[in-house]
Picture 1: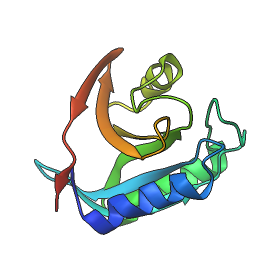
Picture 2: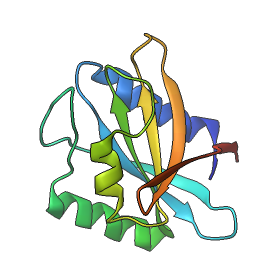
Picture 3: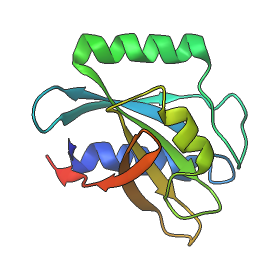
Picture 4: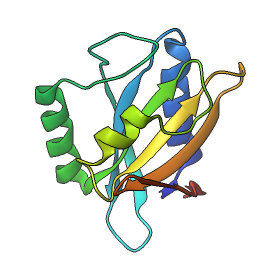
Length: 133
């Protein structure tokens, strides 16, 4: 995904606002061979937990609809409070419902935010580049 530094900064800022709990949201993209991020849309983690995130189904539907109005839903993002930015088994299981959607993870374990993006398809995790837009 191509993403402007300002949009990536929004995701990191969201993670740093609540470093004790996982935060989450989605990224709307313009469709194309190399999707381009258009907007970051924050969500509320219904668990307010350092161990997992979940977006309420009604909120997720509203966010998905908003992404469709702009282009499409290109990524789901969340933070990992206590670990590196690599998909957990819970992330892999949840991704089965979102084929083709990137998973942007902000790792906060080392004190400095580290951001990585992945495609998770059929249980396989593959890191993909976040390219400057």
